[in-house]
Amino acid sequence: MTAAIERLKSLYSDFLAADPAGIASVYAQDVVFKDPVHEVRGLEAMQKYFAGVSQNLQECRFQFDFAVQQQGRGTLWWTMYFRHPRLSGGKLLQLRGASLVEIDEANDRVVSHEDVYDLGGMVYEHVPLLGSVIRGVKRRLAENGNAS
Image 1 (tube, rainbow, N blue to C red):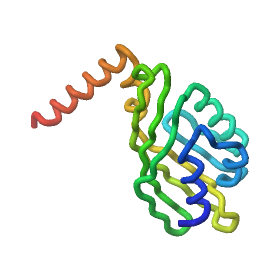
Image 2 (image 1 turned 135 degrees about the vertical axis):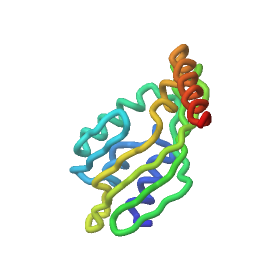
Image 3 (image 1 turned 180 degrees about the vertical axis):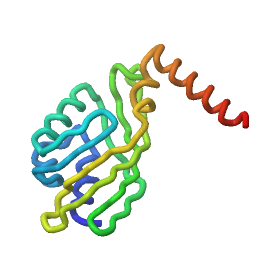
Image 4 (image 1 turned 120 degrees about the horizontal axis):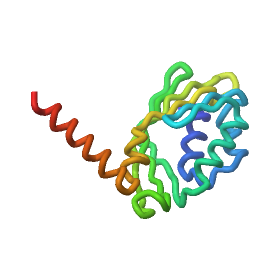
């Protein structure tokens, strides 16, 4: 793994403790960051986005389960552990996902980062009333898929 990937893993190991200097040591000035909620362009926009999404989190850390890298591209599979007062009564939740990254090898910085995960599993399923509806829909879809 490149130093950029190792710095990325370190940064996310305790996401709430990440400081702007740490983010700048991982990502290029012209980074493009995408997740199921937003797409932001540029380091400053990314720092603002991270500050906003972490505002109400009580805990957020990533455990990296597996990573591969080849020719300036990497894929990291992870489990995120997070706690938010409005989701599942503030219980510690977990979400599996993956990060697809591209690295500027000359500058050893991430230039593109896309997080892939189930947004419903992260948010919607943990909101009272809405969560039971989403789980019911998933259950019915699974039952219909097994009916063939």
